[in-house]
Length: 83
Image 1 (cartoon, helix red, strand yellow):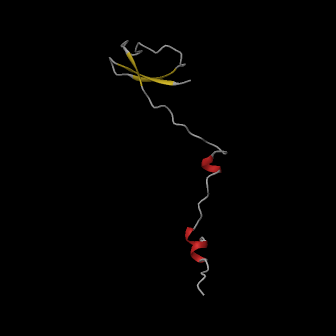
Image 2 (tube, one colour):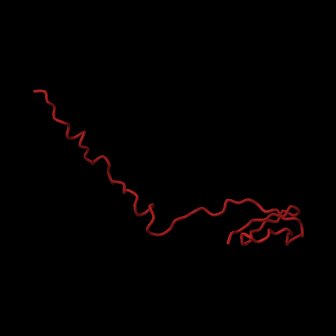
Image 3 (cartoon, rainbow, N blue to C red):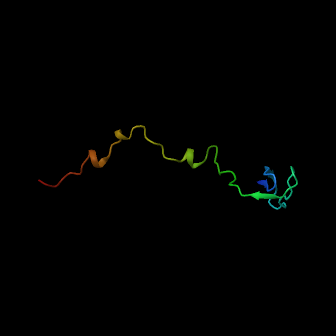
């Protein structure tokens, strides 16, 4: 169920309400009886937790010391045919 944020245009009171998407929006402030305005919020971000996700299971592991890796082009040059 989504959370909606409302703000009273009269007294400035702001609050959050859990409502179904098909519920009618609130119109009256519970503090002063003034007119409410539904605010636009960003909502919660999408978070993946636990095992089985790319971030912790399939991502390539970094090597501890990249300077010690052997590159075939640097250490083993191609033989030349100049004889």
